Length: 398
Ligand code: GLU
Image (cartoon, rainbow, N blue to C red; front, side, top):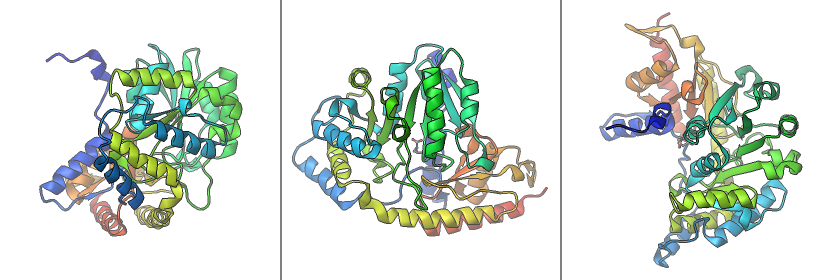
């Protein structure tokens, strides 16, 4: 069968693929520890579950508006107004099929062939693929592990050409866990003004910061940019509702209308009863999952310390989200029997096959030489993973 040429530039999502492999191994009876998925291991709050069941029983199973349940758009607008400190109306918000569709709609609505979008690396796997699918060209700008993966605003400015349309930022960051500070965002705002760009800001982990670090948004430091600042959010990470597939986009009303037009010709909308569950979550606020933060914090410390103690592995304590992005360049070039550990992709493969630990190679996030470990898993699973990775590293010969 001849597939469209656009597929040539698109690989399967590495996060989705690795999680599927780990699930298949577990189903086949292998005792695999999966730290590959970015998915809270906690059930959604009771009030969310009850609202979802009540919606099903009340027969809320038909179509709703393409832009989302009106009550959910209202609730999300109130939440955004609080979170970003600038007023949002329902017309400036749309409900999407997870944050992933919000991103895809924005790229489809904003990009013409050849338009460039700056993507700081490491980045979430789907940004470059979605930009390419929309006809655009991702331009990656690396950050540095020894600077805590902070945005390199000077490098972003240098990467701008006359084709650059925008920048995608994500803080707390998947996969690095970096949390951008206000000073850096203010510097980015200067570049955005000077080069006349837009910014897509993926804030899906906004409630997941540690050590009292505040979540900071471009809108906090540059409310004048609100017509060029497009927000992507959702209930997946903050409320543990990944499979509900409810995301939000926040943007000027005209752009929201354009995205809703696109959705109306593709997905229509996410499940109506999911939207009722999301309404309960957003109305209750992020505070209902405060206990999770305590658990995530302890796991973050344990996983970082456990990995950093291994010879050839180094990682610093991440400030947010639920990932440790470990530098494993010290392991590359070593051997496991006849196998040369040439790169992070092969290392991830060997860890899965030999140690039965599923993680995602840094190459998938635009940063070879690193591995992403999710700590949205029980402490017991993390202890097992640390012990297995440690034993595996011990088997490597120089
Ligand atoms: N965002 C999550 C991750 O990075 C979910 C999987 C995906 O859609 O990529 O693991």
